[in-house]
Image: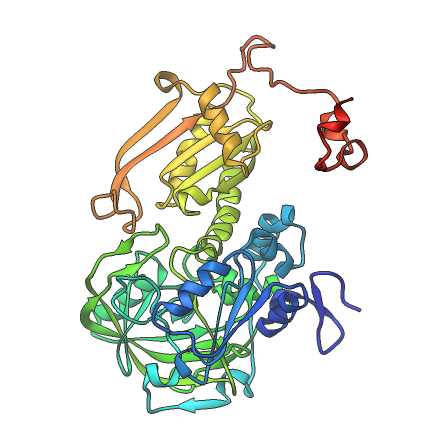
Length: 472
């Protein structure tokens, strides 16, 4: 029998329940967290509207959206607790487990008979073959939003996995926003030689591979190996039918193609994670050579700016940032990318402060840890960084701008932050820790003795209509 959060493998070993997409959907269904949406939901706005209404409550399974034979799923990882459950760990262990997988990756294992290649289309018509939604009001068209873009270092052959927005711009053509990360570095190398870069876009993979795709690791670290470590087994992969990319064998859909050298076409606008539109501009282009998929596949879509979008990127970043800070600052206890900062821009750091100035050094280290980080708040161990009200209280009562503010101008930030100038802007740190030489009672938090131990069910009950008569 498998343990909670685990499932039995074919050889009777236990894998986390998130190691299988369909197994994860079974788990959500069994616990009342999977909603079946009636056939006919419009792929233009309708799928996104329903998915957003259910976001964080249940995943959505859309049957025959716009009469398309392929079903759409959304909202697979819209809660931090769900991510822990998919990994087979307690919520408090998520960051440590993710970081362990990054440090101890498992090489993948290639196989010939792959479910993701049960059906092969060499004549490609993306909108006819796949139910690709349009999400937000001013999106420029249908977008693949949950596709894992897999590229290959042209020098070393090591793969990279990441998620990019992909606009359908023709029957076999996708516009791609490539931010300054590893996939773009690989492409720039091949483009210098006027060569295309082989790619694959994987749609509909297991939750743990989804999470692994967001790991922030050095170049030439294959995120599919991190996915294997999260699963506790070498990830089964298959070679694409038209190129050398290896893809998760148990995925639902694979789109094979090439990033075209010296080609740029108009892409956008598109509703992004900051909950604004990414502007229209000339972007990179993928030409699709083949589409392969399972029989009766599932098409996964992530609604831009929704909980799944925010958390999927946020929690792996937290794990990476925690490890990054602890290497230099043993005082760091925990980190949290707040939802109010779209799980990218606002970082809260909890420290066990031992010397003055330490919090400011932590702020500088955090701002250097990832260019997306815009505002950092450092607090003491008595502040719950997962409770935004507690963090705001610490800033309100422990922070003075003239001594506790760190301000850095003209630094690299997120190009998707509309307040920046093409990604260049200011960064701010708030030292909201208690001065070590403060008198004992000056920052003493109030507390009612015994409050936490009160059994409310034993000492109180809901008031009835006769509440006034009980006054005596």
